[in-house]
Length: 425
Image (tube, rainbow, N blue to C red; front, side, top):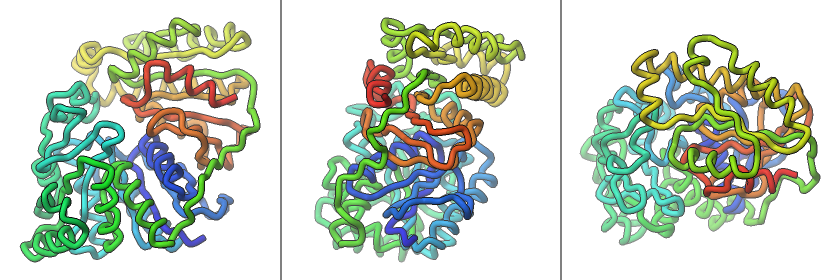
């Protein structure tokens, strides 16, 4: 295997988003869960996205796991590695974007790294170094209140500088609009002044294409799926990857029971749950009982067993931001989050034992806990359900053939759960 592009994603739903973007751009793409074992049979592909659950763990562990993934990708011929982060730059002042970037930059020996979470298709743009969600700065949007990584500063130069050991600069939109040579000259100027990372503005898709062309001059870039789109288009244009429509998931139906799990507390997911209640049975877990150690998972599985034979179901642990804040205040952020994630993983494992082979999961942390528990080593990327969310067919799973959808909390329209199941026959 000789890869045109290697990618390291800091959570599983973000990895699916990126894999979907690369596939749409014409790259044959596989998403793996963790660094693949040497005996995992993978098809010949242009890109591999190694999914890590490293966004919210201790920074040192995130660095270790990310460097192991980079070594695996470089060993398969990847000349460029993208460290894929959330399009809302989810992190804290302690990391993990900065520490991982610093370590990977040292390994790649790059003088300077391009960084942008922009993805205009999904309403994420960067202007003068500030991240916007739609028409408002991130810190004024509903997305600022992530339960684990709240983002209350939209200025990414400041945010990254608080995490990184290197100085952080800016390539502004005016420079970007003058084309690749202007961007290269600006990066060289910044590097000469001792700056090791540059936030790059991007407002339009064409900006991503310029960034992608310049990024390939370097061994490493950092950003969301938008920069992945730019990299993919640049690779295709340079003849380093095939430009072909790829749908790695065959149309053969899986059949059998289907279930949805929702752990995200985003406003988008809360609306999606409300919509699902009109068309399928929905069970809301009691977070207090989960955190107290009462067996909500067994209650949920008993409830599901009575209904799986008649159609899809949805089990939700989602709460409003106010309810989440109250839970965290009483029990601690990490303890509350871990207890709920593990309960959802218990439920997923029980559903699969009951014959579920079509599973939709909403929420990055929830998706990570579920996929880890199910022991799925990788996915082939199939049809797009919504922007950033593809159908995934498990490869190398010991529990039989499965299709899944892993959704970041903010992604998808109001009918997402029904839309997903319609593409997972």
